[in-house]
Amino acid sequence: MILWFVALLLAILVSNALVTLLHLKLLSKLCFCSPWRIVDDCGGAFTMGAIGGGIFQAVKGFRNSPSGMNHRLKGSMTAIKTRAPQLGGSFAVWGGLFSMIDCGLVKVRGKEDPWNSITSGAMTGAILAARNGPVAMVGSAAMGGILLALIEGAGILLTRFASSQFPTGPQFAEEPAPMPAPSYGGDYRQYQ
Image (cartoon, rainbow, N blue to C red; front, side, top):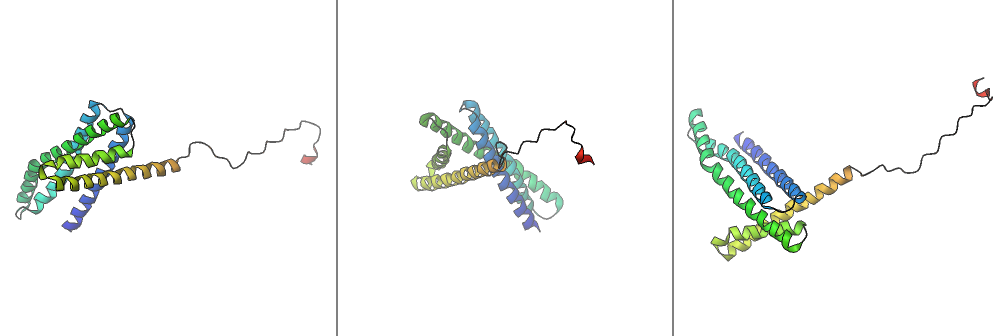
């Protein structure tokens, strides 16, 4: 029973994270690269990491505590207070670095397209893994690029699907025939 609950929470967390990332990417396409965008992305990533990490750590702390409801709730709260801010900070670093690289690529390339995000994800993964050596950098860069390619692909598919659901204007197969002009003459045979 608890395993199903954890699986459900994890599925909800992953889907919310993907929706939030897509939302951030769609909003970031609307505004020009500025320091405020970087700070905003950093804050959004911190919030997502802290809330998601809090939920995950609550379940983990509850399961790993000794039996008894008081012990389990105390262990759950301790795990949340200990690990959720750390996870939020890690997400904030990732989001801020990603946003800075993305803005830099937009400025250098002069256009904003999915390749900027994919490259930013790969470069962010590589930079954050730099302390672990070149092999770790290549692996993290590949994972970051693949993850962002999946997110960008999902965003493109979602945009195409949404645009096909809402056509831009009325589409008639043919022009309707004009109505005949009313005759106000003496022809009353139709009423007899």
